[in-house]
Length: 442
Ligand SMILES: [Zn+2]
Image 1 (tube, rainbow, N blue to C red):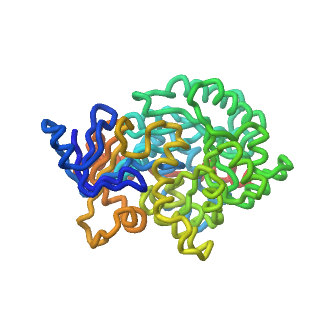
Image 2 (cartoon, helix red, strand yellow):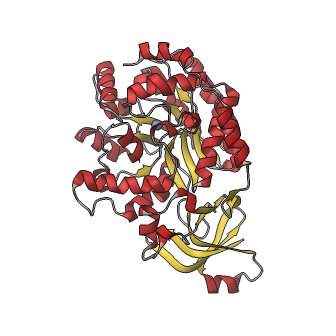
């Protein structure tokens, strides 16, 4: 297949009148349209205004998609214990599959081709199967919770780790290696030391398995961890082995000097979730400083109940604006840095090599965007447009591993109307689990 358009190969390389040739799951060539057309005269041509690397959602909760709008105007721990944990506890396997499918649909529709996805405690198989079916690329993991967790989610430590191992053996490298596993403790508050150390052992036992958890998102959370362990949150994670080049920590809003040193020294990846941090009033992560220290920063939407959209373009815009207003410096976190976070940096965090840019021999994860819209007129600078003005509904084409998931603005791998109908038909009932969760919450 030969795709033409203005090619944004990476944050510093734009070919105005360009083309990308896809052969199987890989990119065969990238260059000027006229030259490429001459070299590949037989190829079927598909044209879009702008072609970019598929975007990487560095932290998402697909299975929370049914909870969009149920928990506005609340802070993290109340949000979690009053709404989100009772919801997760209440979902059966079919509802979990519906929730995950809805999440993956929104991601694919709006240009995210790889996600680092924090599932729930139960029914993880349903989400793995849904991701495989949708064709999205992902680093997924069942959540671990073995302390301070409500009925329906609290697990025995050994059973939680054994179930994780079964899922690794079943799904790590599944669906032509589009799906890989991340061992996923929810956060230090809800995991014992034995559980956290067990997570590290499992990641070490299986090649390519990574670790994904939340860290230092909110001040009550770090106070709870400090009470439990006598340490700062990131120091504690480092102590039990949950830092390193195979670890993705979502948020890292409240870190001190020593914790920042640990993140940099260990090569731990940080996912910045600006919309979620603003909506839950968690705080502002020191992202410009992380970048200066050489810490790899990815970008994530977090979940629909704390965002409330999975649009990666909105997230890119927020990512830059929040750093600018925080520092009162308009040069902070420019478009180029943000585009890197949403592409190559996210790919590094997820651990997929040759991903996140349009280059010869790299994975064919490609997104096509329309710019025949008022907000793209005039189009002086395509990178500026992508970060500050574009929307997820400008996405017309989504390809993962050379497979077309969306064409001409229509998802072709799934029946989007049917997915929305099924999601609307799920009646959430949180009451059964809410009382118990409220009593356990810090
Ligand atoms: Zn999260």
